[in-house]
Image 1 (cartoon, rainbow, N blue to C red):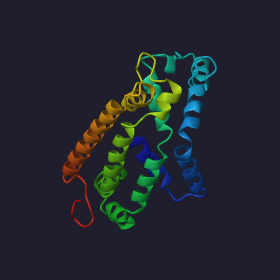
Image 2: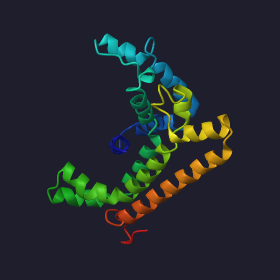
Image 3: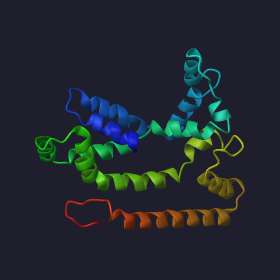
Length: 213
């Protein structure tokens, strides 16, 4: 979310050709998850992958990435950061909905960029922040394709996520009842988390109508 917000702020500038950059940052989000996973599996290859080749060229340690229990999950996290286009688009829409008069008034009052960001951008963007936070947590709980294609849950189950456990029980071991129970428990946990966040949101999410939903 932090990276998506930072990129959205950069892409919110009125510059020539900014639409092209917005498209480039969004493209990974609409690319096939399997294709992205295969591409990153090649990039993380310890022998010919561009990442380790570049690290060795700089005389830096080149980890095994997907072959290491310590680096497999960070590798998946790094790959997921490449596909934050949806968050960027949502933040960009929220930023463009903030009246410019507020920033002009802040400048007149002597506020600097950081003060304007903290006192204007964050409060006005809080509904978008809340929405992106909720869908990001739900999406993170449903990670499957990347781990299934790149690691099969390994090494030593270091990337064996809940949805892969559900999939294996349902379709590999044919324990459909157990798999259904896992899905319902997962649904209940996410529902409870979302309800709690909606309660907490009343304390920090600002709506122009003055009423929290």
